[in-house]
Length: 361
Image (cartoon, rainbow, N blue to C red; front, top):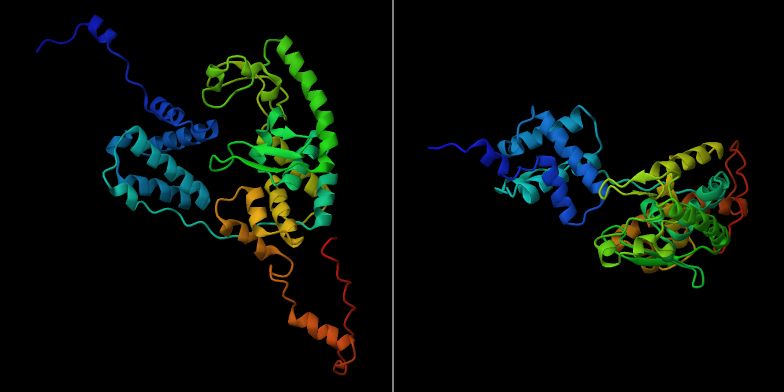
């Protein structure tokens, strides 16, 4: 059999590398850049774990061994382990088109059911009091509008309606849009921030870097849209950077770690002895609305939860278990103080109960 000449070999299309195929499959499905980075990192780690063997040569035993090593040796959380599994399932099903049936038998890690950390109103006030400038505005939107951190960072100028006091959340978790309120306490500072943001946008345009990344194919459909004020990020990064997908020099939105660090510092200064992060403010938003007597379906819609059972989780962290149940110990104490029951001889005198706050407080 005649072998191909060197010239014929050069004319053959190059076979894409595995990670390039993974990236192409992710982009074809319009997954986010964060998902692309996470999935490619897990596929690379999986291949290196098995001595650079091609995944098509590996099976359920190798996947289970990799996931077990993550849990036992790396001691990763259940959610991290499940993310690694999701990346491998995507690799085999969508990239290698190889689903022999055993993929369904891979066991997912069981995530522990934990109650969210919720701050009191005074703790929220102290926490927000420790934030300054744009960090305070973002903290107010997390607590006052129930935004997730990434939803806040991805807000664009056109998503805020100062007249109706509404925020339009686009492509939230589960690729869903929703409308939530714009806190009136944050409206004035946010409008002043818009003035500073517009000046920065004008300077970027003058430097030829005033283009914003647009979702899907909008940039091709509307060529001028990336340079329009309405599409700019509300909370921009401090420096220009190169877009990893388009290669264009532009200003991205602020990174998550910036606000995460600011909230940790503010919590430490406020002497809050609880694990606090930006997402804690979203938990406080939901819990404090339920405490104020708002309907759980309304809170579900504002949070963007698909299932009301997810919102019901916050009823477990209310002061009285979510059902206005009074502790029998408090009832016994109130009876003793009224004189109906005399404390036993030698028993300490119980302290007077704190006055009950009204629901509107």
